[in-house]
Length: 280
Image (tube, rainbow, N blue to C red; front, side):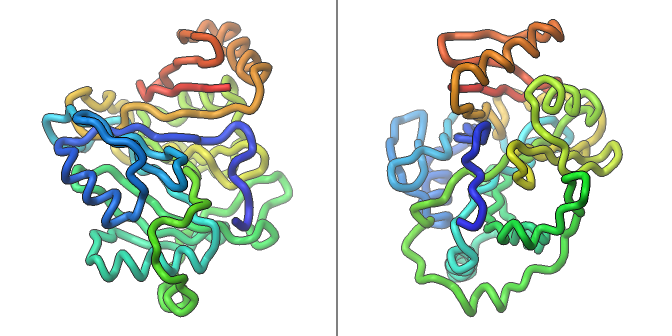
């Protein structure tokens, strides 16, 4: 992988809800090529090389709703450009519902949705010396056309989602950029990398381009996603040591922000109602 995203803290897992588990199983295993690690009547655990990246749960009565806070997309980071080429070649062969593709300078990305409208990004990072980092550490916002032909020319043979694939980042619809900035930057400690006024915000730890994306494109002041709708259930933020967890806890306490703690785990909702498990 060109640049490791697994420097604490990082997004370890995403948990989503769907209407039909069997339909989701086909999409995530056959179309996306994730490994089915465990399966029950109510839940699928999916990932690569026995590393669970995505948990899919039943229980949604209807598909993902517009005009709600929650998941915009989760993003699977593949190790190399050749791997992304193999993914693209496979998706085209499967006639997958690709919705977009872009060159973001720091990464190249393919976008699609699962059958319930949950957004999925699959991307590869460029080497960090090509990111065009500004003097203040921020990054330019770019969404140029993807060089699909170039990707297909270097594509690896498809054998499923590459073994070193990780959960690279998560991008959320939120009710307020200002409130979200305070929570993710001031309380959780993520660095601001890209900011589009009051419309979008991208934050990271350890000089990555972003671990958390936030936007108000579903509308400002939008309500949380209903619990019986498809969409985000929660995501897991992993920190390396318990002292990092305690540092976050102190920030939450100082701000009088509501949370719960159980051993080496914090449970907290962001200002838009998105549930986060912070694990050490």
